[in-house]
Image 1 (tube, rainbow, N blue to C red):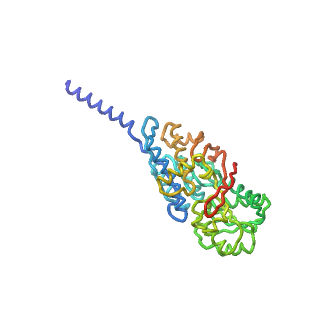
Image 2 (spheres, rainbow, N blue to C red):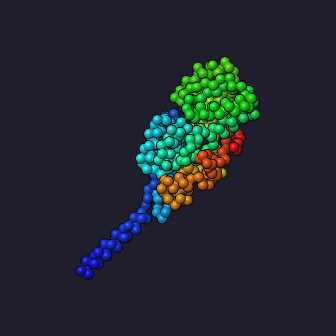
Image 3 (cartoon, rainbow, N blue to C red):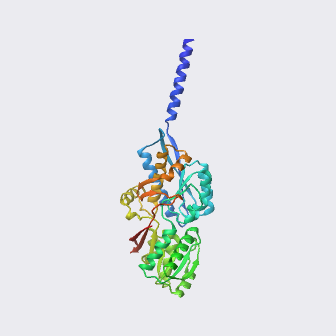
Length: 379
């Protein structure tokens, strides 16, 4: 009888010890990332993924404890190919994978349709690069971004064109995406308000490679500048063909074109491009040099554009986890509005819609193919 009691006590103690250890066992927490990893913008998408992965590797190496449990972060990377339909499919996959938050998508055209799925699931979505104002104007509590919007970027670029480049006549082209249309429309409104004459507004698409018909028409209109709302895979060849056709007009573009890769895509026509970035450029970030060095060490390549923003987005999610003392998606979401985080890209605080309270627009040009900072506009 005594032996039986002792055996029972030992079993109970072992069970208690096992349960105690289970309570403190490692918890794996998934954070999703979505960007185009195939298609014309794959280089930008991979750059974004690299930034998120770098943050996760750093946090895991340092050790993360939430609610008394050791937490190991795991990146769940998905490819939306820059396609809105595929974006919604991978968004649902991430929900099914039980991620606690998502960094992405890269473009406005994919971020906007995917946002409804994350909203329905109550999962935080932080886009590092979607600039269309509509993204955060849908009334969702889950949508955030760490860049300025086209409502800020378009006017900043237009005002620079009017005041500094003294542009009087301008032609506008967009790539028919939510990003390209949104940016070009904001630019057009501001350009007219600044006294410029918009001689035409044409549409192409983000898969086009031959722009000679549009450019020949524009050449006859003789504008001082051409504004194109597109990504660099479109904007680069567009600028190159404009130069080949003898157009002397400056090429103006937004952040999708404003990359380190544009010289490869535009050739020596890159030096005719003036572009805006919906945030602080890497060379203007206080922590930019250090980030660039560790990014280069990890990936043996240079930053393309928005990897510092995906890097900070991961840290912002983890900051919300710490303040919530939980890895529950609902509690992470509840902690997000109070975000006040200082990272590589600067201080991040959000307004009621999930936009940055203090957006910044940077203006760049190119000299011998290298991106050169011109000016910064605080919004």
